[in-house]
Length: 284
Image (cartoon, rainbow, N blue to C red; front, side, top):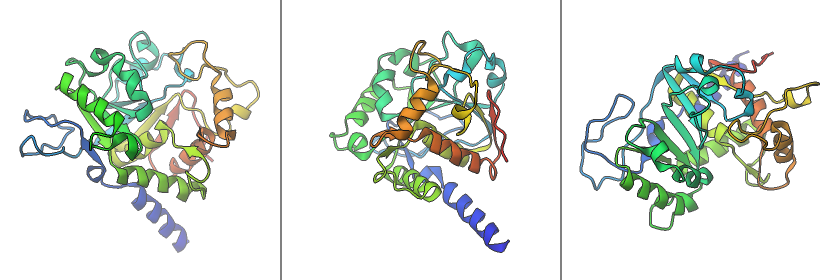
């Protein structure tokens, strides 16, 4: 029994990493920051300040078509902190996904989609914190990081926007978590981590309790009569969610291992305060 407790302690310690070491701001403001951010007292030449967000309860809203028709919006909006991913909108879907957004985790590949509607995502009325993840080649700050350059321009156009990027250390941390939990090297196995993977690891650092809405488990697509829904709730007529998951899971290169990741999420839910809604998960 002692070795089991030691192993759980090791997993917990490796997952709960000080976020301030791994997330830095794209832009810097001398104006007072709200309680979610740690003010940095310095001049504008400073490259950024660490993100500090701690919440008793975070509700993570999946981009899945499972959100449709569930009328979970009012329940989600009662959460102290509400997290969304990539360019998933709330407008037009409020009854199912809610109205508020505290933090949005964004893939480097989704940044251009946000910039198609910059006022909606970065306008002054939007008080969302953005955390953007991506490989160093796209996020480097020497003028050659194409995505970082996009974000820097957005921060200049919308100075009230709070945009953070993950560091290379943070990316490596998430890669190592995948290898530790699956026994497979992400790069050698031809896998790309999903935004959901980065989101849940970040949430376990920042949130005392986590509620996840609209995420299916790793066996859902094998269940007879499962509910067929679009891959994204805001893309009607898109590929069926399970078809998309199975395609990615079997892709020899460049696929997200959605099903594998969800089996890991079920494991984490046994040692962290994580609950799944719409559909609920039965954790053995």
